[in-house]
Image (cartoon, rainbow, N blue to C red; front, side, top):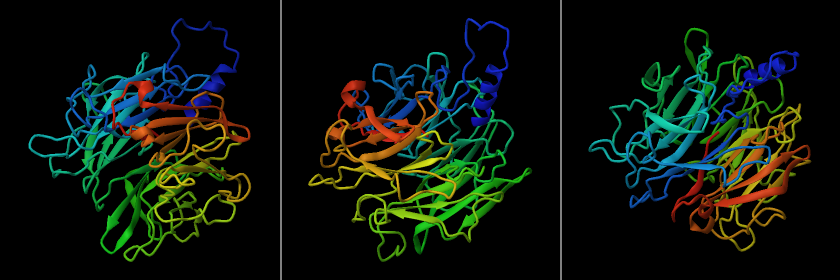
Length: 468
């Protein structure tokens, strides 16, 4: 979507003599659900009750503005909302996973929502995916994605969702994962008919996650699938790239991790893959680092070179705050975005299991900055908790500050703002936001939005997922 934004900016500076139309065209920005030019935040509350249906789930949308997001500009969407397919039922977990993209090419971003506990007929918790349509008034209505008939019970289908133009045809595509059933839905989508085509992605083992972004600089997004295999609990990393006529599979044999994000950290025109490997080493998984780690695999014209030595960062890396301790979960969630507006993608890493003083699993997030030489681990690295001056609230046991993280510019100032999920806050969850600035994240104007502010019920797990 960056190319479209640049084209729009060029048009606005050419001195057109026409008057502004009474109704402005939608922005076309990924994540801008109402087309007003400000990206929005969508966060899951997968275990909120809807009526008497426990853990039916909901999605909370906070609309962006020059002053950021606010609980007063929101929408709460469930499977009982008008036009949304299905019915809110116990254990559906609607909102367990999320991804954005303009699927029907109308200039408004849409939202793909996973309900990983959705039951189909007599098959319990097989999972499902739903598209919520963007429009002038924001998200409304929806369309269910075609459901694989071969899913077994408790498959968790739609746990992983990613969007992107995977074949460089100008249409946004979608991929969903769950168990051993990975699907590719190719655009364009229509509101009545759904995707143009859909098919199963072969050659993959059991996978519950997916990452997407342009690693090769060719305008087509690669699909990166972490999956588990016998004898390697750290998993394997496979990715698919478009060759112009077909998809070619490649493997990063020495890479491990289950979460990830893609951004151009060294500004060389190729996206770089950041993998979070949050699990502590143990007898069946000798790799990794105590407390978790991330690795950065730098992209190139043929994708990341499997023979490269990736950048490895953990809490025992010099210059990184804290120390690697068991169950910190450093790398549980990662996100990339340009926080300070210097043109280099920065990285935010969550450690929701980090102890803060005597508060167990209070959680923290760490910010690392991009540069021409890659991800910096020395100057400028900073961690944030709910005990950091200016951050709302206080660090309490089981808050899980960092249950999810996302970098998105919601103020349209050219700097990415940070949204932090805190899914254990007061046992119901919350979403914290910090603004980006020329000097990095600032706590000025930081806010914490809790379940009471968005009218969610107890046990919501609000902030367990944030759309990227």
